[in-house]
Length: 249
Image (cartoon, rainbow, N blue to C red; front, top):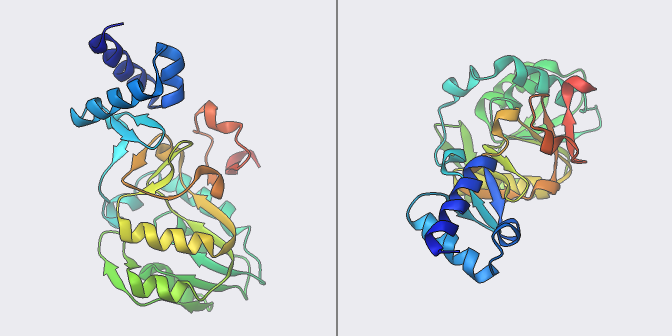
């Protein structure tokens, strides 16, 4: 098979599936690992796909920047609220909870039934809402990122590293099996990664539109957390043990 023909087939397969692994391409094209990796490198250089660890994803499925909170709040609003309702039902009075910045996590306080849980959050709006409801709330220092209204940076991580959370609830910009959970900002990713590691039980709360999307920085592997999402999820994800679909419970 000619190089140009093989590379055209790779692009076609990536666009069809959204993401493919090096192993899949080796089996499909009967080519060596080194050949496939060279092909992916060249196709990435030409912006025909995005090369990632272990494979590639379609350019149309990539997220390179954050969107303002006000814009995201209106997207899939009803679905996000139901996901948040399910997440809130998992929180009890004995919990010390990390609540990540994000629009879906921001709805979780609206559905809380516990009274004595303790919350730690890097989101200004989440802290304000929880305080108004009478909960004990801790916030880190750090730099305020305007787009996501999240506190980030070294001071934020230093503060969060002192805690051990019984449960953590996290937002994400992208989800794939190969790349796990991703977000555009390396400093925000660092906060998520640390807080997730400090949590005994970890939950990603996200609507199904984030699946098969990938962003710039990985903060956790796909099996590092359970995922609370909706029934719009593609079939290939439904048999995963860590997927919790709120409206099938």
